[in-house]
Length: 137
Image 1 (cartoon, one colour):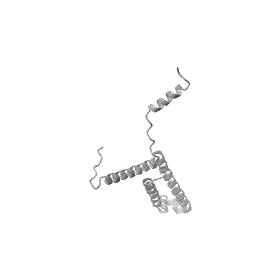
Image 2 (cartoon, rainbow, N blue to C red):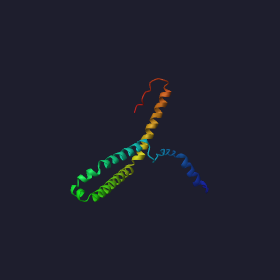
Image 3 (cartoon, rainbow, N blue to C red):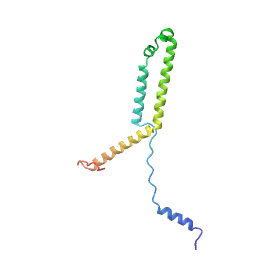
Image 4 (spheres, rainbow, N blue to C red):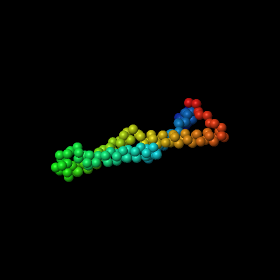
């Protein structure tokens, strides 16, 4: 005869029969690691170089008549152009980093490289001076 506790006991048996879930992957930092920081610095330097190349003299040479007739307006236009160009380039780059998940991917690469270095050091330590054989894929 079945008791009121029978469904509960069946559920416990089913839970025990299941294999445990795999451990979740370790969290990946969203703050930029060394590679992501280097990429962001490289891009910031590239933007600064582009904006520096777009000097007032270069800009004014594209508009010789207005530069001669109303130089104050061209200076103001040049400032606005450089500000907007720099802002748009930074925004587009940040959008690409976000859309393509670049920072977490570079952080994961940093973690994989660090793990490989640790495993290599451990294998060399365990080899006691003998040559370490690379694992066969």
